[in-house]
Image (cartoon, rainbow, N blue to C red; front, top):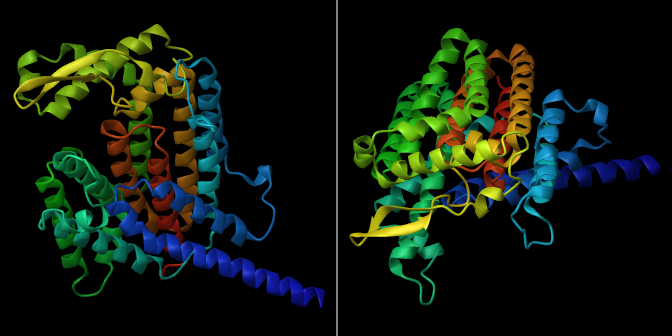
Length: 410
C-alpha cells in the first residue's frame, strides 16, 4: 500500500511539473509580444516545475561551479545594497527579489530532455515573428486589442508603450535565433529555405521598427553560429572572452566616450547620442567608488540631466540615466565596483567550462548555443540593465531550452 501511495504521489508530482512546463511554453510567445515582463513569473513556474519534478533533495555539493559563482556574484550585489543611496520602498528589496528569483529560475535545468522540444522552439520562433509582422502592418491592431488606451492616456504615450513592447519581442527573437535557425535547417527539403525566410523576416521587423540593437544582435548571432560551425568550441571561448572583456574594461569604454567628436554625435540618432553621453557620465561616477561601487540600484539616484533630445522642436530635459546605463559592464561597475566585475567575470569563465562539458556529450549544441550567447552579449552591452528580472528570466529559459531540446535529439 505504501508503494502504491508513493507511485501515486510521483504521478501527481510529475503531472504537475509537466502541466506547468507546458503552460510556460504556450505562454512564451504572447508574453514576449506583450513586452516580456511576464518572463519573470514564467521562469518561476518553469523552475518550480523542475524542482518538483526532480523528485529528490538537491544538495549543495551537487551544484555546478557555474551556479556557485553566479550566486556569489548576486550575493555580493545584495551586500552592496547596504551602502546604496537608493531607498527601496518595497517590502522585499530588489536585490533580494533578484537573488531569490534566479534561484527559482534555475530549477528549469533539472527538467529532463524533451524530444519534441525542437518542434516547440520552431513554433515559438515562427509564431513570434508572425505576430510581430501582423502588428507592425496593422497599426498595432493586435496590441491595441489586448492593451487598449487608458482613460485620460495620451494616444502617443500608448503608441510608445506598444512600440517598446514590440521592441522587446524583437530582441527575444534575436535570442531565439540560434536554436530556431539550427532546427529549421534540419528540416528536410525546405528547411534551409524556411530558415532564410525566418532570418529575413526577423531582420525586416527590426528594420521597420528602427531597432538597431535588434539588427546588431541578429547579425552577431549569425556570425558566431557560422564561427561555431567552423571552429566549434573556440567560438564559445571567443564569446566568453568578449563578454568578460566588455565587463572588466567597461570603465575605459565609458571614459573613451568623452572623446567622441561633437559632429559625430550630431549625426547619431537621439538614442545613440544619449548612450554616448550617459556612458561617459557613468564612467565618472565609477571613478568615485571604483572598488565597492555605489551600491545596488544607486544609478537611479544619479542626478545629472540631459537635453539632447527634442520634442516638438524643443529640447527635452531628462535624467541622463533612465533606470540603468544600457550597458552591463558599466552597470556592474557603477553599483558593485571592481569586486562585482571580477565576480561576474569568474561566473562567465565557469559558464564556459560547464558549456564545454555539455558540448563534449552533444557537439551539435555548439551552434545554437553560440547564436544565443552572441545575441545575449549584444543586448547586455547595448540595451538592458543587468538587474532586470524579466531579462534574467528569458535568458535562463532559452538557455535551458537549448540543451533540453538537444540532449535527446535524433
